[in-house]
Image 1 (tube, rainbow, N blue to C red):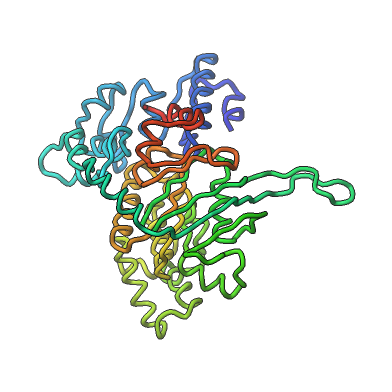
Image 2: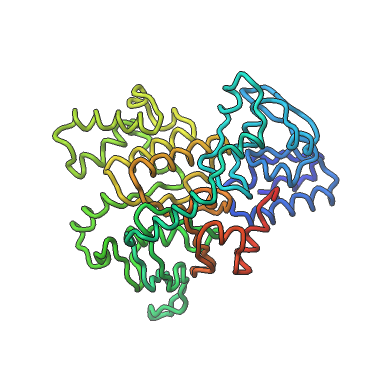
Length: 405
């Protein structure tokens, strides 16, 4: 796409979200490439993004837009250090901080909805989770039994065959990994694109069959279940996909999409009771009753993600896998969805595997972090330990690639 854009030697390049949803290392190479091309060709760049870390990395000046209007404009450093407009303050505050552990993320409305000016750093620090509280949670989780146990799990795909059909090469998407997840815990799974994160999540749900290994849920071997037993078990384990738009049927209203799993599993007495449950779920994820009859294309990205979360909650799961569920959202909507996931976990004691390529997001959400590289576990441990004192060179490389760090 970049090659096509520069093929005519432009004097101005408009880069519209060119690094959205890329992992940090790939994003870093794209940013470096754009800067190198800019120097070589002497062109100007208008770089559009919702990632303020990228702005800090690449821009000379920044223009902040809100509801179709420019609300602030100037050199990057003064805007970042002394923002004037409440919306700019909100955008800067709702990024997961690199050096603090927060109870919840600030949202834009904390600033735009206040009558008095709010100072960004002071407000962010007021949400910090004290060290004793973090230790108490870790100790509490260690006392709980494992909910999921994975042993020597591998998922390989054939990539080349001989004339007689014999496999010549295997792509080892997941390669001999073992870990456990305890009740009520959030295990953050992070790594570059192609490291095996999504394959692992699909293997855990048996949407992809493993090559070998063991998966036990509450001590029960998931790989030995029949189709009927597996279907019943899936009520307990749900998946929130990366792209909510493609995971929703455009021909079904939001209400029908959430109602469907209740009908499939025969929950509640009749469709009227199920409809009442759907309305309750919409309220739970901060949507309105009138949204029941609307279609997915009528909603914003953040609202569609809330719809997908409501559908995942419909079957009262114990365990939810979030696969890059906030990667394409802007920072303000991302903060709202992350806070919602946290609040739902506290209310229902969910267990999460939270998959992302964004280390700062995983750090905010997770009790423990697991770093994957080329299908293997590069590092695993308490989130604070892995983030602030990484042991593997790969984890250090991922952290160093975070823009604006």
